Each structure stands twice: as C-alpha cells, then as structure tokens.
Figure 1 (cartoon, one colour):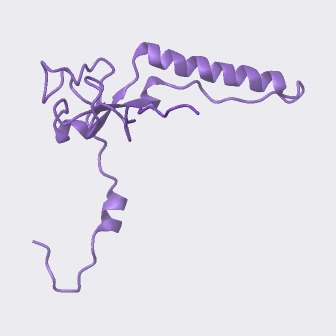
Figure 2: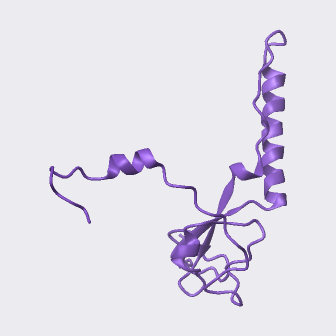
Length: 136
C-alpha cells in the first residue's frame, strides 16, 4: 500500500493575473488581436463543419462573423493588485496593462463609457409612492 503524500491546496477560484494569489476583484477588457483571432478561427471551423455536414441542397445560412466589440474577457486581481471599483465597473481597452504595479490603483487606458441607463427599466424599478408623497 502506498503512503499518502500531501498535495498543495488548490485555489477555490480565479487567481490574480499578476501574482497568482486568490482574486478579490475582476473587471472586463476587450480581447487582444491574438485572442480575437482564436474566436474567429473557432467560428470559421464551426461554420466549415456545419457546411460539410449539411444537406448540399439546403446549405446553412450564417450571420455575419463576430466583431471585436462582441467580446470581452475577465481580468482578476488580488487585494494588493486590484484597480479601483469605479474602474472595475467599466470595460477596458484591449491594450490595458492592469494589473501592473506601476499603474495601480489606476490603469494605463481610458475605459469605455458605460451604456446609458435603460429608462424603461429605471421606471419599472422605481417604487410607486402614494399620491401626495414626494421623493425629494
């Protein structure tokens, strides 16, 4: 019978992109050109396979190829290497170097502006007050 040997504990979740410690914050950034090329290659392979397997008299119809604006990827950081919460709420450029120690707690890019709020959802979420009550 073999003697059991201890193993290193496994992380329960994502790790910091800089040091590997457990992540406590995440944000989104656009895919780099190489990452997006992998998406395009996978989509083209999927389309090629579907075309190959389809009935030649009824070939599949595909929509447009994906665009870079369709994709983001998560970036994770520990408490020591995280950016501010305000910045983490935004989508960062594909060239963003965060989390790099020299830039913390900021980053080296100008993140995208958040989308405007959906007025219909805002109205639906607002509480309805009795007549005569004021919210100001």
